[in-house]
Image (tube, rainbow, N blue to C red; front, side, top):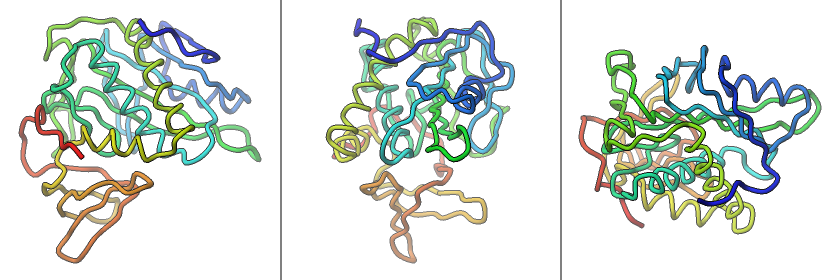
Length: 260
């Protein structure tokens, strides 16, 4: 097993309201990290745009508190690539996994993991970054609890029969994320962009990007040098730094990752 990254803290909590909330509290108190904060149970977990994140027993919830240089949003790709590597290390089956812009990991077409980036810290200081990660290791939430158009959830155990605990998974995830963070720091975003595109789902296909005030449908062309989504629409090329992505119809994503 890859060793725990040097200089990175590790906290395991039996229960928290949410690992992101705890990381933000620590950031507000002046903690800069890097430190992983993992909870075996969450009582008030949340996802993007404040949505509830259901956490079944045995699932994974952790947040990385750090104060990185450069573009904070690109750490979503650091986390996604590290997640993918950790899951491949567990299963030995890279063909099962794909990446969905901007922050999800898919397993045989179902959402197995999500990432939530938040910032915080004392006023007047550069913000600390919190990367929250939830993984359905043991069980997936009921599909009926999801918003319309959301990707159907999946769990690692349900899809592969492989059981792994949260602490053991963290010990695989932290080194994997550290590898991509070092590459970003040393080489810039280009190698991460290439690696992400190599496992991205739906490239070249029609998708819908939903914004707070409108929805834009177009062909998923690529991501640009900053990580923004690039859509080819009837009205021209559209570049979106943030959006919720919806697919036109359900299908399996395994084996459909584009390679660039």
